[in-house]
Length: 311
Image 1 (spheres, helix red, strand yellow):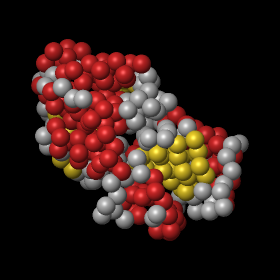
Image 2 (cartoon, rainbow, N blue to C red; image 1 turned 90 degrees about the vertical axis):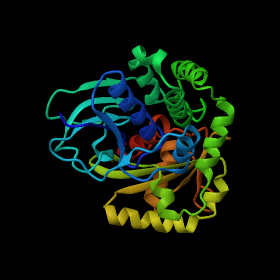
Image 3 (tube, one colour; image 1 turned 60 degrees about the vertical axis):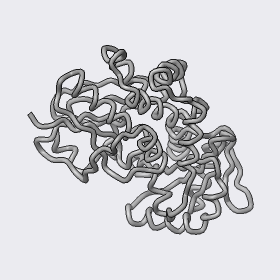
């Protein structure tokens, strides 16, 4: 039997890197299956910080899969986010916390989707038989995922179950949540050595709204000014990305982790009008939208933009 490739969305973030590492460990060490975690894309700085702190090697980076490969998808069921060749491979399992996107599989697959703030919370529930066998570093990876996805429990996607699981994982891993989260968010906010393309592609997802593809990119940071200083370059690169990928539109949200608010950058009047409608907001003199309380792409941003575009 081919090695099972456990992977998340492309490009990867902390959750879609660390959760596959955990689930591959579980499948291999508890279930006795031949499994390995893989990623499709470059690690971001927050994920690098987590892996370095926990002394865990990064997953193998691959560019495509093909016929004969067996996949377990973690943290996605969206075809727009999957690795090249996914439709030729066999998807045997999906573990996620996002809405269904209409992914089709060639054969029946085990599917677990629960409405938590992080897929790591779902995994911990699936791994009950391993709770007393979980190494510190594995618990630490799961905790990092929850802290990242919930912005340390400040995102509206956070559930009481996320908080409960994080508390259990903090005990097992021996990690101080506040100190660890501060280190993660500082790493995430460091834009040194990154150009506009790096920033825009670090956490970007494509969405099909009415048969047209829109890209929504997010930068979660404790220092929004460092990104806003690059506004001209960011807007120019957004225009290039749209042209190169035949996108109907692109929205870039700079999310202030500390203040729980966002600033939106757009490149066209049409996009800006749609965003004003979506969030009942008014542009400032520099055509920026300041959005108090807006931090979650999954729960707040994408649904509102879709509604505004389609209405």
